[in-house]
Image (cartoon, rainbow, N blue to C red; front, side, top):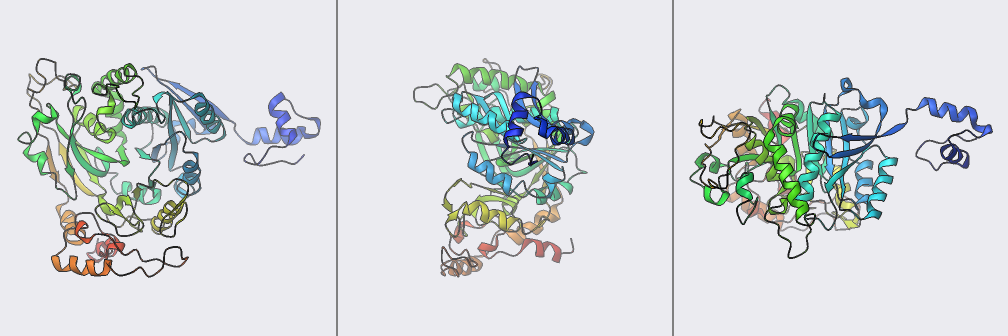
Length: 511
C-alpha cells in the first residue's frame, strides 16, 4: 500500500480505513505508523460565558499555554472568498514566522445568517485546514450589513484568541483585502516590547456616542471622524470639547487603528475584551438589536439606527478603548508602512507597494487580471514581491501617549461612561491628552516624508507625466509613474513618488 502525504488524494485503502475505522489487512503496519506518527486534528468547540460558540480545527499538540506565540492574528474574511484564502496561504503565510510558530493565524468567518450550502462548505474547509475559525453566533454573508458582521467577528476573534493563546504577547486583526508582511511587523512590534499598553496600526481618531445615547438618537451609533495622525494632525483631540460635542452626543475622542491592521498588546486586548464591563454590555445590547432588525439585513425599509449598521467597525474598537478608560502607548505605523494599493504613484493613500510596506490594503481583485501587468492575481503578487524584499522595518513607529484624565465623582461609573436617556448629550467627558513621545523621531519623519516644497512638487509632477519605462503587459521592470503629486504630501515616503528612501535616511542619522 502506498503511503500518501495527508494533502494528497487518499487511496482506497485509506478511504476504507477512515470510513470503517479499521485497517485493511495489507496496510496494517503503514496505517498504524501513520496514525501514531501524527497527532490528529480535533474539532475544538469553545463555549463562552456569553453563550457564543467558536469552532476551530487545530493540532492537539499546540494547546499548551506555555507554547504561546508572539502574535495571534485573525483575518476577517468573506465566507465565499475561497480563492483569496488559497492565495493568502501560498504567499503571506508561507514564510518563516508562521512556520516557526511565532505567528498563529486564523481566517475568521461567521456562520449565523449564512445559507446552508455556504456554511456546509465552510465546515468542510475547516475540517481540512487548521487555519479556519468558525464563529457560530456571528452574523456574516452577503445579505448582512458589513459593520454588523465586522464588529461581531472582531469581538468574537479577540475573545477567542485571548482564551486560546493566553501566553501570546500581541493580538491582531486584519482583512482579506490586505497583505501583511509578517516578518517586518514582528520586527516593528519587537521594538515596542518594553513600552506599556501598546496599540499599533495606521492611527486615526474618532468619537462615538455611548450606548444609551446611541439608542435615543436618530443617527444611532454614528460618530465623528477626527482625522489621521499623519496627514491631519489630531489637533481636535486637544481642542475638545469645543469641537463637535453635540454632533457626537457626548462621545469622547479616542484613537483607533484602521481596519487593514489592528494590533494590541496583550494587556490592552485583555482589558478591552475580558475585563471591561462596557464592552460586554455594548455587545449584548447591540447583538440583540441586530437580530431584532432582521439580522442586520441590507434590504431597504429595515431600521438601522439601533444596530451596528449605523457605525463603522474600526471606530467602534476605539470607542471601546475610550469607554474602558485605557491609557495607551499609541504606535502609528504611518502611511509609509500602511497604505492602499495602486500599481503606480496614485494620490493620497493609494500608492504602489515597496520594501517599506507592512500592510497594503484595498487588494479587491481577488481572482482575475490586475496589477501592473494585468496578470491573474497581479495586484496581490505584486505586493508580495515588493514588500517581501525587506525583513526589517525602515524606521520605528511614531509614538504618542494617550492619557485619559480622572473623572469627576458624579461622572465616575466604573468602566461604564454610559448616558441615561434623561441626560443624553449633556455629559461632558474631560478631554484626553495626546502627547508625542520621542519628538526627535517625529521631527525626522516630517523632514524626510512630510511636506514638500512647491519646487519639489513641480519636479515630481514633471516626472509623473513621463511615460512608464515598461509597457503594461511586459515582463520586465516597470516604473510606476503617474498620479497626482499635489495629493502626495502627508502620505508617507514611497519610491514610486520619488521620495527619499526612509531606510537609508534613518541609517544616515545614525539610528
